[in-house]
Image (cartoon, rainbow, N blue to C red):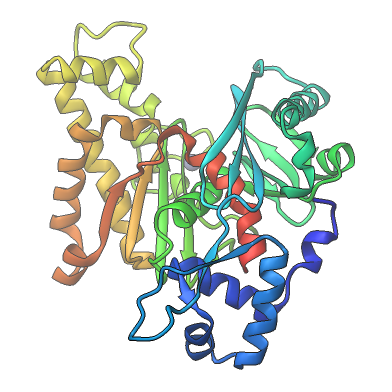
Length: 387
Ligand SMILES: [Zn+2]
């Protein structure tokens, strides 16, 4: 879809109606009018536009109370497609998905550690090019490209300002991709994109406070309050990896001492294992710790249990600061969930202020797996279309 067309499709009433249909599954025109307060004639004409624009379809499956069955409206799931890109520090992955997160196509390129800005942008374009190869005839049905990247992002200009892991600064991602593909491009930090992905494709009905905490090579979080992704004054909301949880301890890559990250990342697990287990291998990895724990090796199980306790402490701090309804945990470290979750839950139980927090704050591990970031990137477009 050409840039500009996208914005023309939107209006406040139309967006409200489209969202009502999406969240209801199926709904009649009369109920939309009743539940949104928009007048029936306006609902009628907006629905006509939405059908013409291929976003909504009519179905006749409604329950009739005698007489004619009411016509219900539903989202046309594959009326449009979106491109989602996960620009990681080792690979760039991309997908084409529809409006409800079904994935139709995938592409991936590896990137090397000392990549230059130009090489990075070329690789990024190559992934989009690969994805589009089989979809050129549907270009009008592609809403645009969403890019999720670690580090600090200027979402207004679509620039990656700084990414510690790949060492790149000021990478003009939106400018480059829009020029090359003439599609709208939206960008977001990876933790926030993951949060949107979980929210759009799994948790749309949790409307008050929803958070994702991602624990992998680093730790980041994303927060949605009243349907809005929170950025903070300087766009740094969610940097909980750098919350200080100890006055002493190890130095974090940010320069501070005692950051949450230094206790819970994959590297932290390896350091803990090497400290506590005398015959731990010099080349131990976090995956190996998990494998040995699964074999029943007690010392390795203990390392993961202690890690779970520290993860739990960060979650307790998060609950007390934000008070969300639901927290989804994601990231490579959570692949060891069977050993981590019991001590995470126990720590939360022991430390939260009141029983209601313990009983009513839902803690889950993401079921989107490794696709959480690409789907989150795709959801950036949906967030623009539906809000
Ligand atoms: Zn730090």
